[in-house]
Image (cartoon, rainbow, N blue to C red; front, side, top):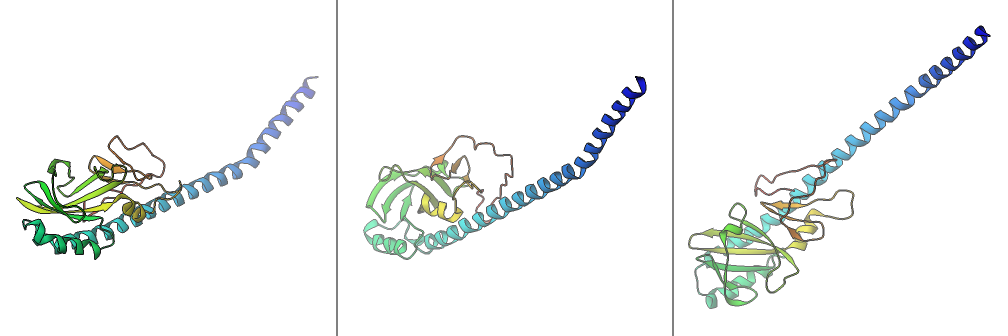
Length: 216
């Protein structure tokens, strides 16, 4: 009886060893495949983030240039500056509006003409960028204020949030991108949010604009 039991036990061990040997290349192959896929996804995320950042920089380059061209109007009476201010918006498709600022108050808008509203410099990231969720005119539309200011006067260029979304090319779930400016960030639905950005450790990539200092 003993030899028979030993034989059965040896056969089972041999079977287990054979199965383990047979599975080893399969498991190794799956690990290699997983590593390759993971690396490919990480590279794709990095590429998408860099491209999105470059596109937003291209938008901001044009907005900055357009604002810089008519910055000399800051401090002039609104009636004298309004026509040129509106032409500045017409000539740049990325602009929603241009507003003249004096003593941290907006006093002349390409949309409204003469106006008076505060523009708190504390709201601006790096003194230049303010992402906000709408204004009294369009409360449901996100927008970016780009500020060029030398005390006591300057100009604010306003860009629609949708323009920034188009530049980031946020579509679907494959590579969700966000635009971060200081404490505020633009989510994929075009909403400006100030709470902590959700954790996304898998293939998470963050790039900072060298020219403007914001992140994507």
